Image (cartoon, rainbow, N blue to C red; front, side, top):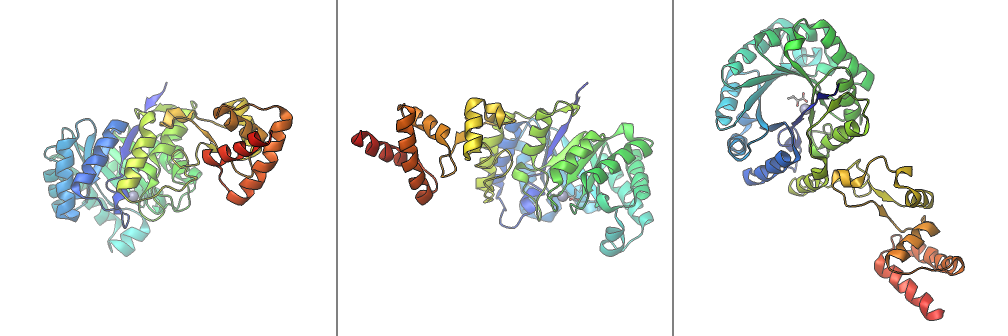
Length: 385
Ligand code: KIV
Ligand code: ZN
């Protein structure tokens, strides 16, 4: 039986940490509303203690958005948690996301602390937050490089203290999919009270593995994924919402479903890219300009015979009207014939071969051939016939 996978969007918090991406409150509300329409379940609106601007954005997003749970980040520090709760006071449903570093690196070299003191702070933070908002999520920062036994005990302790979502970040994007999946499985098997909480994945993309790691987490029992639109985020970014959602939709053997309205993906991706000033690489999975563009002759011929020869998704499912057959010097006769037909022209094989010869010369010189180029080419051939 398929279980619900909660989509926790952190575009406005982890995504917005990227240099050059900063939005004002008005722009954040536009993004938040777009994400609400897309169907995200939890919207991480910001880190209220970090600046008055961020505090204000969390307040205004809480007022503007109705459906998703509104989440605010805090460190495991009393003041952070109190300010986060203040910022969330208008949210229809509120969550504080509090936590602390749990790896040896973070405990010794960042916090200059001890595992015992970290554990105490974590429990105290969750207990405080529990009394201020509806639900508490705990993040175990740098869990991907943490000692598994310490991770087990801190997760058990924060669940006892009242955390109902436990986030296991691969903060540095270090894990391989099998390793990350094993961490989630280990927690499922070793944390005695794990049935009282949902395990969340939060993967960074430093090795290009964020989506693979998140899916591995889901296959091993995680039921919340933390993602950003277009995968934006610190350094190489976070797990892409669109990649995880479409992988799950394309693979029925993954035993979960999401409530994302996938037909809104493309539009939402474009809104966010524009507002955040973050161009999308052309070959980006799902939302890149070339994600549904076929340019080589063999592929074009295959797609024209049957779309499924080279497409694993219907572009309409992500809000792209149709895939495109791009005319380049690598295109074959089938693609040229297709485009000529779209313009209302059909030719016998001999004439098509003739046009194709000239088309190749033009395409070598010009790279991409558009409608105007094709009409000019046709003009010459029709005049000469
Ligand atoms: O990557 C990370 O560990 C984080 C936490 C603050 C959740 O973003
Ligand atoms: Zn992160």
